Amino acid sequence: MNSRFVPDAAARIEPLPRTPSAAVVTASYAPDFERCRLLCETMDRHVTGIARHYILVEHRDVALFRQLEGSRRTIVDEQDLLPRWLRVFDDPLSLFRRRIWLSFRTQPLRGWHVQQLRRIAIAAHAREDVLVFCDSDVAFLKPFDANAFWRNGKARLFRRDGVLADDGHDEHRIWSRNAGSALGIDPAKLSTHDYISTLIAWRRETVNAMRERIEETHGRDWVSVVGSARKFSECMLYGRYVDDVLEGAGHFHGSEEFCRVHWNGQALSDEEFRRFVDAMAPEQVAIGMQSFIGTDVGRIRRLIGLDARRSDCLRRAT
Image (cartoon, rainbow, N blue to C red; front, side):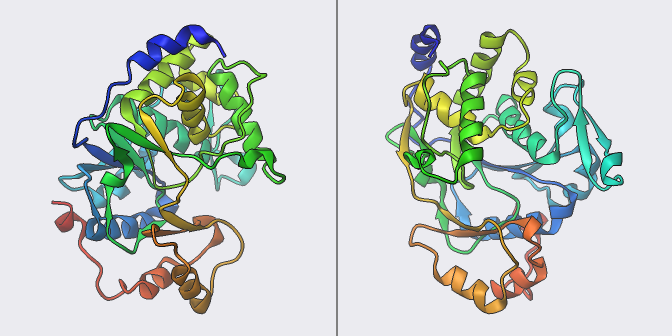
């Protein structure tokens, strides 16, 4: 570890206010619009303790997502977050079905890469103390209070201890190593912890300090540093910054996942979906159906009882 950064960085971590302000952050895109609408409806019904909901999208998707905007929900154009030199194009190698972000400073990036960059970048524009990250293919089924993310002036850092030491986590280990490289951590200092999940929280000031650390270490823009390796994880970056640079300052650890996610495989049948919901742990308040699996949003609505009771996001967000 390059220890010259540690004392100053840790000293900047002040306790959170007794009642911190919090915002939910969701990165999305046009094919997930209906899923994101469902997220908004279930958030408005079940989630408390949140001052604002930021939805981060590509420039061409802004007009579509404006339908979801309200007094406490803001659509954010990625052009207001990321440097102008990172340009997006239709990808001819995919017969123009997919998008690709190109520059002379990064590797070619796909949408899932750029969504991660947006999540980091929003910290420089938001004003809330805590940023709660929630994917657009999530739906809340139970009441949830964002107070679960802070305790005694500290924010909850999701961490599954030691899992990268087990077999079957090769990609996660690469993300962890690349995070260490971006942060200037000694390559000999490996981490076996996994920080990746949805419905997790970061301290806004800590994200901004992490960006400064990356830029001071490498002498160039943080986006170019992170984007120079196509295999990266924003959750690994933040987790390793907190644990390996700040030595945990301003945070406490929690391994319980508040969202039960169907990560891969086939779309669930109605009966499999009901069993999936029934198997939620007591602390789990939401479900996630990965959008690439192809579960029909209308089926999800019907199975969670929203098909005939769709709420008006513009009304509920006021």
